[in-house]
Image 1 (tube, rainbow, N blue to C red):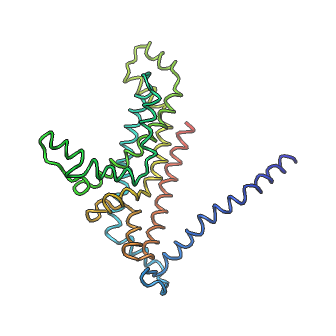
Image 2 (image 1 turned 45 degrees about the horizontal axis):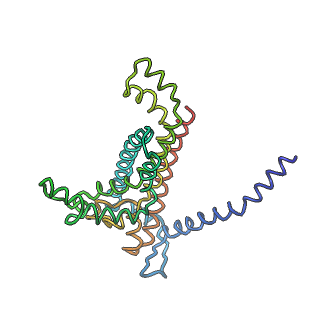
Image 3 (image 1 turned 135 degrees about the vertical axis):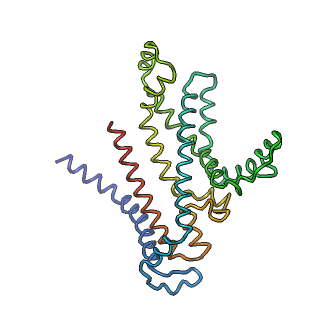
Length: 290
């Protein structure tokens, strides 16, 4: 009886926060759904004619939609490959005994705390500038012609910029998992004649499997809504070469003033993100049960 009373009290105490959270999410979602079925133009906001699924058809048949979808998943996959492989390498390196290891770990993790707009501006002006950037200077030193990274290879440039910001996060998660590895297994395998590569493949990598799954899940959810870096560096260009779904929705709403089709695009993006998130969560759940 006392336990039931305590549970009821706990639910009562939590109910204001839950109600506020639901309202915080439900009201914008309801407004987005309402706009997606109406012809709502920012330049003519008084019409609001009901058009049904016309906005969805317009958004899904727009040639830019397929291109932005490919760019979205290209960015996600590229960043995940760099951060997972780089995170494993850095975690293995930082797990080794060395002088000043604590300071090195702080320096490696610190880029994660830099705001995306700041890091994008630094990369755009200090590294990838085709005239005064570091990469242009290195190209001049080695006697090759400098390239305009953001104009010639915009998707690759964005992948590098975003991966730089997310690499510390992956490193921190993987390093934490690596430190929980039983050293007795490593020592036993070494005594049995297993080399460093064999120990990594058969002991370390399976142990890091769950942490890698968590890194992929969390990063994918955030990378699907990537926006700030694109706005600061390429503005989705040249053409639509670096436009992802989030930036396409933004351009529909605030550059073309078509809130109706932008809302339809937002709903489509949310549905796709939820489908992918559910798939990844089930995959992570299977790894955690294994």
